[in-house]
Image (tube, rainbow, N blue to C red):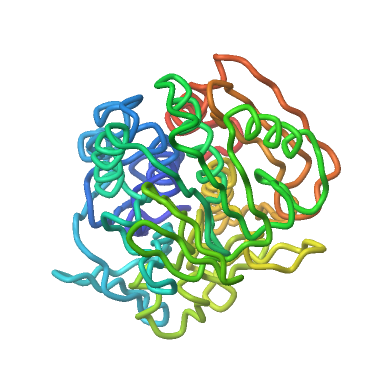
Length: 402
């Protein structure tokens, strides 16, 4: 029997938090109170930000107001900044209030860490696509750049969670330069700490690696592997090797850290703001605290141990949210938990590489994958949107009955 007084609180309202909240409501209806706390009422579809600088995507197709949707699902929404979490007293402290909970789902995501490299913080010399506001500044820089083109540097830092965005951005950039007839005037150099060009790969060479190399050559993109950036200055990028690259347009995907409220909370044992979980996606010390999305501390078991092997992409974010929701329901109702081994989540990633729309499917993401398939087609370009909303608004209610 579920008590109507049971209170489930969700922190965060983007991919994992938004889909998790709606799925919980779909299963529970009015049987429990559900509250979402987020610092913004605007949902941003971040995987599509790569298109914004080139005018290929507009704000209204990437963002929407979550409040009317939550209202229709009888979900309480609090727009506030979370200060800290007290998992012992089961309280969430915000700037304005304190919220008690019975079960907590943390989907606070990750934030860019611009402080570990001089000059990396977004400015005229270093551009970013990590959020919509920064992406608009990159759009302005691009519009100025095409009037006076020059060398370009695109890349990623070690421990960049969304390293695929660097590949996608470089290839979309190459397509735009080709259309404008600027490939010779604006040569692109791509920097990666990986030993190979390996778009969402580990240490084996498969179709995705070969495709990347082919497309990079097609758009005259030179690449440097095993490369770490030392600093960014006006007009140049300095590498740890001592080499300096000229650049009039620099966009580097930074490393990331977890939400400040996680780092400021005691007894959560967070590593740089990311949270350790068990196979049920429960916090290792607090069984009523569940975690989903990029807030999870993922330490994959690859034969390569470098820190950049932590891609946190859209498919696992959605999947982890669904598993966390199920296990919250299971804990409330006394059902069997779903076990998950994060290292062996299957790979299902829709990507836009230049003008080519590709679905990359593999048997694992976080360990050394030995199976992968590439499926191309224009219809794949909208799959990112379709899958998100199908799974959010049309969950499989046959799995559980209350």
